[in-house]
Amino acid sequence: MADANAETDLKQTPLHDLHVELGARMVPFAGYSMPVQYKAGIMAEHLHTRSKAGLFDVSHMGQAFLIGPDHETTARALEALTPSSFVELGLGRQRYSVLLNEEGGIIDDLMVTRPVSEEDDGKLMLVVNAARKDIDYAHFRDRLPENVSLQVVEDRALIAVQGPEAVAAVAAHAPKAAELAFMSAASMEFDGIDCHIARAGYTGEDGVEMSVPAGAAEAVARALLADDRVQPIGLGARDSLRLEAGLCLYGHDIDETTSPVEGAITFCMQKRRREEGGFPGDERIQAELKNGPGRVRVGLRLDGKAPAREGAEIALPDGPVIGTVTSGGFAPTVGAPIAMGYLPVEYAGTGTALELIVRGRRLPATVADMPFVPNRYYRKPKS
Image (cartoon, rainbow, N blue to C red; front, side, top):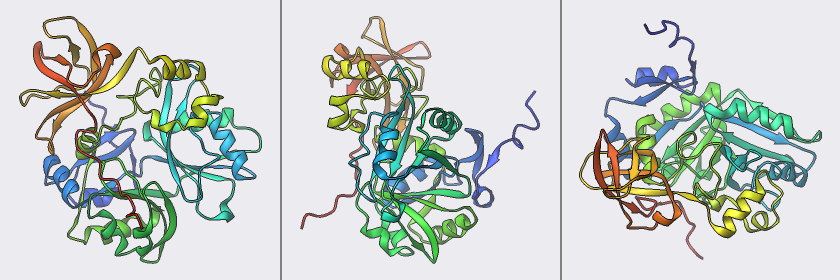
């Protein structure tokens, strides 16, 4: 029998009542009551985001600051826990990284932003995954030097607006948003509300993520949804959009057993860090960079219309099982089922013929390049 208190035990984001008002189907996710879809349905929400702009409530994610006496001290403290370079990170710039365990496995992936104001020297803003934030915060507190502290932010919401019309829709209320470069951020006003806006996202589209005061989140969301270009989007379409973009979902495509090299996310490791090491699991990761890993994350395209979900086995044609699907589903933009999974490197070449075992049936598939849909991140025109 279902626990009658299970739903009431869930946390709610500042936009919960708005989701209900808009007819969202709410589901438990990472300890929160979250919208999985609205009345239009996942397919329509996905395609609207690709063609115009979608609004996502991501307030369940963790927001925090690392605070030290100066930028280099704080950056070095973070570099001791991740394989990315933060000393060189410019004012107002953002970087994707991973928090590593001693074996080089990924505790979580996160976004790190250096505030644009020199008055905030010594601060780095973190956004971490909802299901991992308590683990992440404990990890930081146990390992930060005495002169660097973690400050968790509890009174702010996080709203993502994604799609080719996203920045224009936001800039109608916050004109400075249009000036942001990709992977940059700044504080600005949205209809007089103090916000922190970063030009980034999790869909492969242009767009922004907005950190706003919790009490103002509904006003910001309603202002954006009054624009015909913007529709609310749930977790269902968020997942299919990031899968088409070839982006990892923590706990599925990467976890504490996966290295950044195996996960094919070595772009988070800048040259200095690759060469000098000095991060957890550096011996394993540097060896994999030099000699190649034993397995690697790949994209998969299936013949036909039947999708393969997480956990489906990957086999050689009429042969043995050699891997496992970590994410999969029907890709609305592609018009076909796609998936990601791990394979031994000798079978990871683009075009390799495979079979995915779904409900006892062997479905033909091939290794495919990612992203499945070309990314459309914003690039400033060359002057």
